[in-house]
Length: 120
Image (cartoon, rainbow, N blue to C red; front, side, top):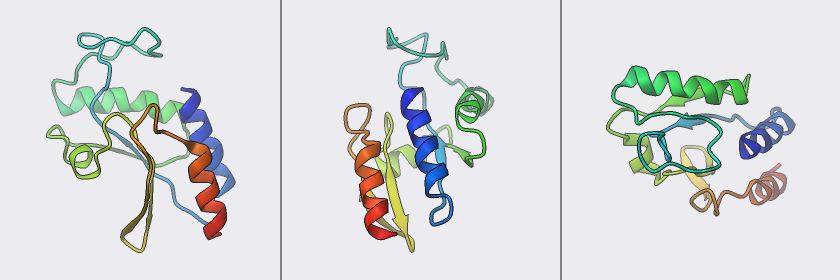
C-alpha cells in the first residue's frame, strides 16, 4: 500500500501535465497460492473476471480519483508489458518512453518522478 500511496502523490503532483492509469493484473500473492507474509489483503487467485474486478476495487480505494483498468483473464496486458508483479511506464505519443524495473524491487517512484520532471 505504501507504493500505491507514493504513486498517488506523484499522480496528484503532475496531474496538470500527465495522465495516470492503474492497471490491475493477476494477483501476485493470492491467499490460496504463494502467500506473502506482508500482504495487505487476503485475495484468492482469480477464477473469473468478476473475482478480478472485486479485487481491483481494493486498489481503487487506495488511489481514489486515478483511473483504473483491469487486465483480461488471459493476462494480455501483463504479458504485453511484462508487468508481473508491478511496473511503472511512461507512454508518450503511443510509444513507451520509460519502462521501470519489475516490482517490488525495481518499482522506483523516485526514478519516475525524476523523468517526469525532466520532460515537464
